[in-house]
Image (cartoon, rainbow, N blue to C red; front, side, top):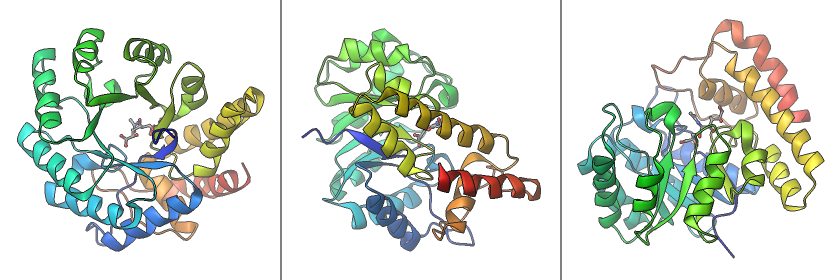
Length: 295
Ligand code: HMN
């Protein structure tokens, strides 16, 4: 059975009330998601707020996740850091913990030429024996993976898939066609999970799955059973929730974490500069609690 199928929540950073990384809450949240029935976790990505954590903190997060998840579900560790040097350190650390695969965005801040991105990814790939997923997320990195670089990357046998968060669903079709049948494509934009799966994504990694895993698991099941009418209905319910959260003053993750807290899963807030939940978000959060429970 392919271990890269189904629903992979992009794991949320779990903090103490004072904002420190919380190993206990990280472990508890991992167990919570395993009990929901997810097939894997994507740890240390955007939703994991990796951008706002130092290397030591990122190691603690992965260690705590692995303590709860090792051998139970598939773990992909996002290990990209601003420098190649730190990315390699994180890659080796992830390998020592026994993760299934690593993944990385292209370099951030400076938008570098393809040859430099190729070198950045290749250096971290060569640092371990692990499988690797390319992470294409132009909305945040301002770099849109070229087909040329994609084709160059997949000549390396360790490159077994891509998490694609570009908005055109047709990009998924292109990567799947060029990568071949066994090449794994993860859908990135949660608002297009159903479209992404239908056009060729094998599975999904998403930043809102952790807040509503039931809905994504149900959508995935409906697609597998070719019940497209139901899949679309679930996607509409999901999008209604996402669009509502995006209308809040508080950041997307801050709002979803607040909802999780009120459902009994306290993993703290989001780190600044991500905006915390604001007083004017209160009625929206109350309406979302109902929507998430009854959807
Ligand atoms: C990750 O890297 O942690 C996430 O999987 C990123 C993911 O693609 C999310 N994109 C961003 O946060 C920019 C989406 O899941 C996104 O949260 C969702 O589509 C809602 O807009």
